[in-house]
Length: 344
Image 1 (cartoon, rainbow, N blue to C red):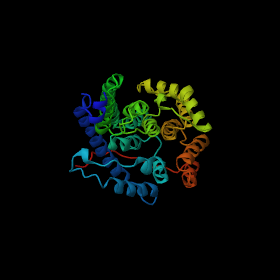
Image 2 (tube, rainbow, N blue to C red):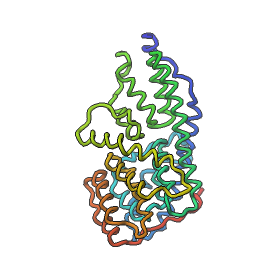
Image 3 (cartoon, one colour):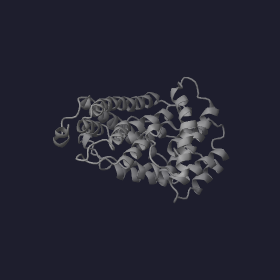
Image 4 (cartoon, rainbow, N blue to C red):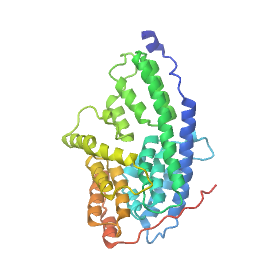
């Protein structure tokens, strides 16, 4: 065993080539969607919707490095924590578009799809497909979700192959197999978790794994993988974790398993948004809340404004969203995105 650890062996056989191809397909499809939706955003009046145009400048700069003439595998990943999650300009632009707009919801999911982050693509798009706003892009929305799930599943197969090696204490081969999954599918949540599980088991002669960071990365990609919540937590973090286990996860599972043939219960939808927020999953909470707002006859209510204000204060603590919140209060007409075929 020691000899194999020192010299290394080939990773376990799994569908790595298929995984890489499927992930590239997800990235390309997401990029094509993104560019078409960005073009739809450009149709907004710059005077009336200045935040949309401010974000589009950031979008163009971030994705200018992706030359679509080059292989998809060569595309660099964009830092979505900076561009989206903790970017006040993104959320200001987000709220200049009508609540639950299908193209905007799909655009958010496609941000992760462009990076090949299958789990986050899948979760965001699961929310998007429940929009009550009539759309002519429903097929595209479902296809984006299916692609995300397909890539996740193929990667899961690679993790199972690695687990079998770990069970046989073939540590180096197991680690190499998990890294093979992450090479084909960037930030695959299950592979990150599996690597973290080996951190305390692998011999000293192997490269040390950063268990805390791996678990943190795994939770970021799949916040509903409760077994990845390990280690020490602050009081507030522990409270969020317990809320996730007790209410947010059951509510999410019920939502995930619901069909789209009939509208999801308004009361349960609102409860889901509050549960996600209480569990510290603010990005997903804000997406779900847009479905709640879209179901209200008069658009944003005072409770919606307070909800959004609370989550934005966590995601972007140094930003001032008073102008955005005032738009809600004044019922300023938002911009509706119109789909056009992607430009070739």
